[in-house]
Length: 277
Image (cartoon, rainbow, N blue to C red; front, side):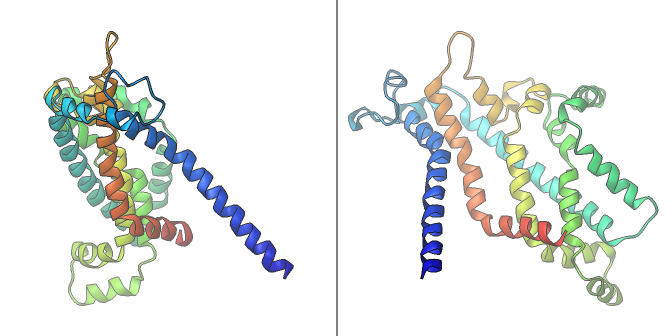
């Protein structure tokens, strides 16, 4: 009886704790939603939601009519989509090679790759910019996408996942006459679906929220991605807080939608990598 009561007490305490943590995490998001529903005059007059009579969508209207927000959004969708597809292809292909093929220096390559994860990205920006300048890729989408075409983290994730695919399955495919690329495309990739979902979500968030490198490599406003475009609303003399909040909220929605869509694959992929690795 005492044991059941202790278990019930523990569950209640855990539930209350989770609700409190959820409230803490969601408070900034609620504040952001409230800020987008205020007029410029009410922006700093109410802590959260203003009276119903003061609610307005004027900041959303101004965002689309007074700034090229739609252009920034389309640029981000294009750059992020291409980056995710390119990273997925090359990272999974490299992970497949490192997981299922034996060749000289394989372990050294893996060790060097993992060591590069310890280097801050800012360390390579100057030489990378110089390289892209001489390749005439500065101020272009290629300058954004090509340097991030391969993800070391993605290669490691796919290597850990593909190692669990039975070698007998691959040998049977070879006996049936499949080429090595067919084995990768028709057998390994479908089996690795949970890891694909997890990696797509991680890669999407990284490319969608990227700010520093696009800020360095892009010069013309028509090429700006969403984070760089929203940054144009901030200036020394005047900051468009209402439009900035509305743009920020709209920029968060694609990430939330993708997470809801890939939630099962995300959890299954990370769990598989953690347990089987």
